[in-house]
Length: 226
Ligand code: ADP
Ligand code: ADP
Image: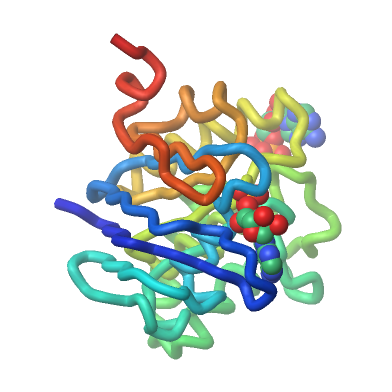
């Protein structure tokens, strides 16, 4: 039932900065978890440790019961979506979505089925031959989500994916994300410093402050103190 389990995670950067200080938290299978806290509290460091972009100093990360603390990024089965999308600028929307499947050498039928399904789910058919530079911010983020989700990761990490958008588009994309989460039945970890967004999106909230986890509980219990 537990999807992600983090025990004693500590990250000290080479310059001596203690960015994450012995944190524990776990996330249930299929939950929409929001990791929240002020700028500099260690959210990005935590995400980058989960995905394997930086080595951890100490601690243990388990995904689906399997220890992945020192596994290479491509073996982790974790997707990552960035605030600034990071689409491949020279590839079309369709090619961006296919890219990971090709790299991982899925057979042609499986590639086609997965791409067709995710394109339909994200309503990207009309954009399939466009270049990223021709898209709106909302459209780019939908392509970025599709590109990650087509690999069917066990866990999807979203690093302030709606951070640069205006309020109206944010609200629209929040609804898209909730729908996607429902339809895919994947575990999400969504990073933000925006409490109102957390309350709209989260099943579970992990509150970080100054390198520590202060609270980890359901949205009701974190925001409605008895
Ligand atoms: P957040 O994502 O919550 O803003 P970060 O994880 O980016 O927090 O940063 C946590 C702390 O680690 C901050 O004090 C930040 O300055 C520091 N930090 C982040 N990256 C590095 C790095 N590469 N080297 C040294 N210190 C870093
Ligand atoms: P689609 O309508 O195909 O889902 P988008 O996700 O780009 O395409 O936009 C969906 C809706 O989000 C639009 O109908 C509009 O209401 C709103 N929207 C899109 N782009 C912006 C923007 N840059 N600023 C504000 N709202 C936007």
